[in-house]
Length: 269
Image (cartoon, rainbow, N blue to C red; front, side):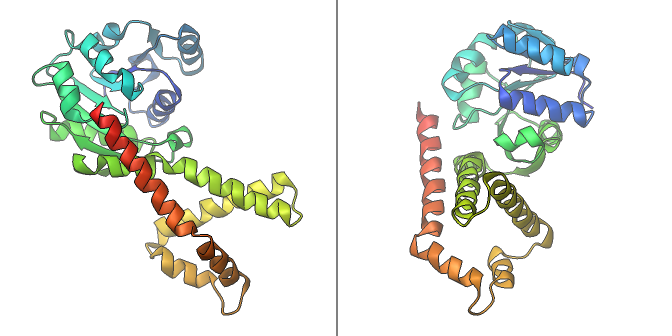
């Protein structure tokens, strides 16, 4: 169990991670503190989750063993520089800011700062995030375990080298939006063929969930699972042909590649 956890930034991702921590009993609500410039947001989290809140980032740092930076990439340097004078060498800084390398965080926070970079995704909200973590120069094995514990409470976690974090951002970080579009498109197809919107949406979302679960639990290649559904001269192969004609596979690859490219650009700013 982690004694005290602080959050700088109390948006949706921060709230989702806090929910996971509380549900998994990693840290009790009374030992969690969050800061934000939006006092209404803070009051909501205080009332709904029972955590402590403040508008002062330094107060969070002073009272936390682990500090999670849940702010947008464009604000990260300013935030880290602002708390650098109160960060101690035995504290762990965890950043979920897309595209921001650990080297930049270490430079802004001061010599010896222990940093773990994490790329979760919006599915934190329902406890099904795909999160990748990578340690900074001064992070310890114990720091890695703490990060795994926190983000494992929100879904699945993998440990990767930092040079692959932009690829993770493009894939699992951005892809929920791509999948939402696919669910919507499948639903539109159902509506076109006569289903009511509510039923079509429920069926399409459950179908995507079930297909994903089969990939994770059977450990079979998606191509093999696809073939299990595809009968000679049947409905599925007809649909697959239409997908190939419209270059769906290429479009999805391009979406991940472009999102990865943008993550790399964010890292340069």
